[in-house]
Length: 420
Image 1 (spheres, rainbow, N blue to C red):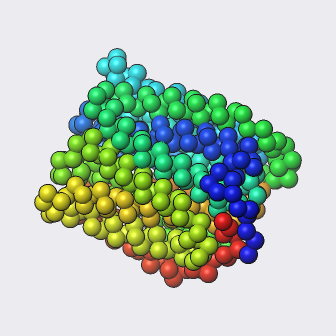
Image 2: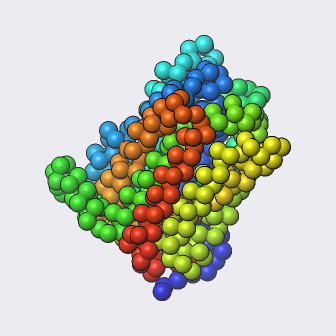
Image 3: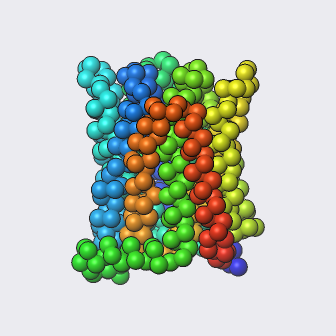
């Protein structure tokens, strides 16, 4: 097994200036996004006083662009330079997100506006993620993929420590709509970082493809579902994604209205969960080296399912309900981080560069395309059976995902891609 050179946490950033700029841009963007991830649902729940059905529509609107545009986006990303797409997506998200605080200031804030913002920012976020995921293997060596993804995930985890706590404070002081302004500014700063990347993509574009759009899309779909590891990861992750969407639809409602948890404590819960994610990001490389990326994915899903299954019982813990929720979210975030790093790295390692855009887009269509349906289902289940029952259903779906992966070829995925 080939190992990357030693050098500590910043080895890759010191030896690769383009990766350092990408890392910086992602970090700044993640910091702002961690504020919006808490503040936007609170705008709906607290400011606009919506119910589970509207939360389902909001969650669905954010992920609907994947169903509509993912395959075409994948072809475009394989044919075009990826850096300009990254930069344009970052600046675009900054503009769109700023509509929420602007509307609040002039009295035009409504759930319909949130739907529009969620749909538009979801489209740009899809482009940003597809482009960055496809761009990373171009600027780092293949044996550095796990380390590169781990560092990017470390930034996400670190900002998730500071972000939710700051968001809870900002929401309490400024209100949820104005707190979102932080995210808007972060996207503009991120775009400036990404502009400074110097990697020349011209050679990569010439070698990627010269096909008609339909033929290119068919090749991406065929490759994804004919490759046993890519197919298994996609189906397993789609099931996990559906479980997460159902849970996410009622999560804020359950914590705020059933457990009476305030925005500040929601921020603290998010910060502790972010700390657990840091542990996951730092431990992903040695754990993947020891057990293989496939087994790490499987164990992580099991931990996620257990945490999700315990959450709906938190209201029965009396004065311990708040510590229980904190612990549950910490375990969930740790496992989610381990799962994300291992599956992204494995997917990048087994996919040829010329197909990365289409494979990532097709996989995203399946994994995230199911979210609008799951979110609407979560809203219906929450309104019909209650939030606790809906959370239990989401946990059951997560355990189905775990069962599928443990029976699949992911268990015997190549370990040679894992480096330290």
